[in-house]
Image (cartoon, rainbow, N blue to C red; front, side, top):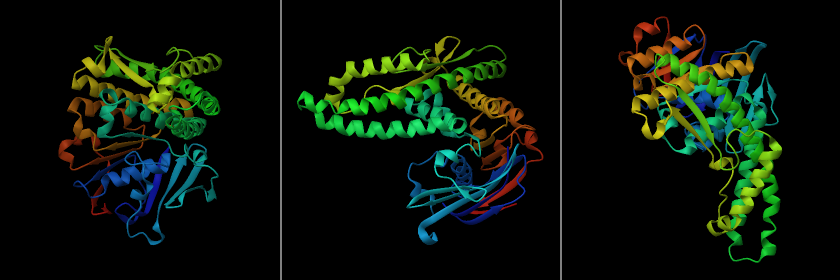
Length: 372
């Protein structure tokens, strides 16, 4: 997979930008707040139809954009032929086109371009909140399994409606509580699909992450990933069994949910744990161990996507190399060189293993303008 060119129109601080003949490794240099991350974000948005930095699409559109809209376009080389991708953002929503044909659903567009983003906040995957880890799972699974995004979107809609109903039921008669059964059925239907796909994804990711982590640590550390579900056993994948377990858990917590006005069970409450040599990395791991685990996870993503779709994704390294020591920088660079098209942002080459990046295409960003 290879991004041949990219164009932005009224995106963030870019009025009009067109980059042609992109290279295998693209080094984007500039001081902070000039637009480096905005360019990386645009590639991510084109792949996922949503930002990794904000949930408000309005923030992606320049304040002075004519008609209040922004556009990202790119030509992507795939093994089955080139694709022209277009994503238009406006107050009315998003419109996505592949080779000029508008897609009925955004989920049909996701997967046309596959990316792995590694940003400083991703170092929090291991030691941060469960929400960060769930977002990581949702983003990565959604790229290679569009049906996952459908079930996730439906689940989130039902979760909101069910939460609103729970807030209204405190002190009500039992008859009013029967309305919950409608939302319960839909919550379970989509929730079970999400949990099953997460477990399958983590099982495959474990294989790659374990091997990569062992290599980075010269065989001194063993990394294990464990899914922590809010219902059922962590290894159970049979949908009928998961459905029964979810239903039972909801019935057991119903009174508590009504008192608190929120749904307490489901994939929105699940987590992912990391163990290094049998000890929980989030609690007992050093900062270096936590960073190595996060790095192993990102490198494993690259291999897993290749395994799933038969092509390597595009790698986006947003101001992250400077956060890694020279040894981890070398491990990361050697992984993507000659294999994965990569975009790297940095304030300067002095913080990078410059000798490892010879031959990279250089771009200098200043105030929303890019110069070679």
